[in-house]
Length: 221
Image (cartoon, rainbow, N blue to C red; front, side, top):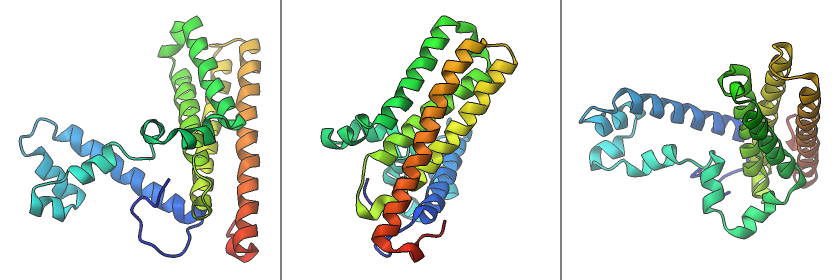
């Protein structure tokens, strides 16, 4: 996955990467808010560059690199999948956990096709959104096993797990609201647990590999 522009130095663990990813999320959110606010302003780019703290962009009248880094950032797995070489794609597309997560999204899509009214249900939208988000985070986590990126892999797995937890809560809400029947919920719950338990297991494996490579004292968990 590369170093994402960070300075060379000590290898980051999952907590270092989590902080970094959170900072990038905050920057992306701020940029999108500014873009929406000043979309029709003729000085839009200049205003956004100033608000984002891009002095180089203001000095050189060129902020395309900063804009591209946020608007098309690697954290959104769709871009990453398009640009990655086929050998890198194979590293996650054929992983059993990613396949299970992707199959979950397909199952939810089919459920929406069978019950179009679900598309207007907030809990159903939350379920679909976070199931897809978990799949994307898994793709990001599984696309690189480089020794220096184990911390980033675990950080992405934690984000996938968080997304799955939200999806499970949304599924339970759909059942309580009688938007889906018990049989549908049973199948959905089985698929959700399969992915969730797989993420937890894989996180344990990667944390074990971290300890093996860098020593038990290097792990802060």
